[in-house]
Length: 281
Image (cartoon, rainbow, N blue to C red; front, side, top):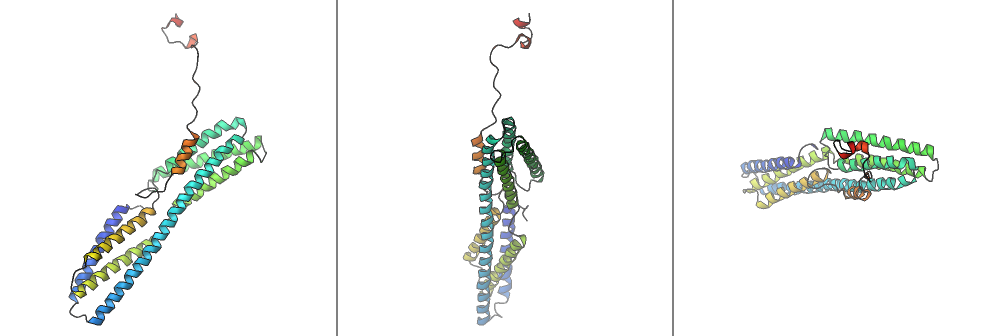
């Protein structure tokens, strides 16, 4: 279900509940003359109970989606902070390694920003990013090992090793958070209860001798909209509601691009002059 577009799910949900409402009305209308007052009262009590059960399931599912959304938002901030700490502690490394580590770290930050724009349903792009992330983490860890050999002081290289370890751990937590969704069995249960509730509402209207009121239709539309929000919250990298990546963007902007090589000054040597120029004559 996670791979199906939310808009398509909402359309299917709206169409199926409207069909259930109409079907319940027609069945109830056939039995209206055989239904006495106590039976009608019992039907209305059942209708109230199922609507209450549907409201409980909606609240539970929305709470799960919001918790996961908040957790993913916090994980983005934590990862950006961990990367920023590791970036600052590059200054503690031996001078011979600093430029190389900064270059790898810039690649890593750019990759993390790019990863936030790729949906998990884009399988090929996701696999490529995962592989590249693992390669960069391995490279950075090898640099940490070399730094520990050159300068075994825990005050300098040790702090960078600790920051790098925290950075890798934060990546794992964020990656795991992206894979946590509302269980499909809960969503299917919500869908089933919604269909049954719509059928009972239509049946109660048919037994009463009138079509479902406009209030019932508005209720169905509002519930479909709420389910749309629940599903959209559960898909952090696509849809209308996405997890903010501002922390990573700010980090990328704060470190700036890689420094350019200094431009050559002074006249070119004769051997480098353009063919046909005065220097070659």
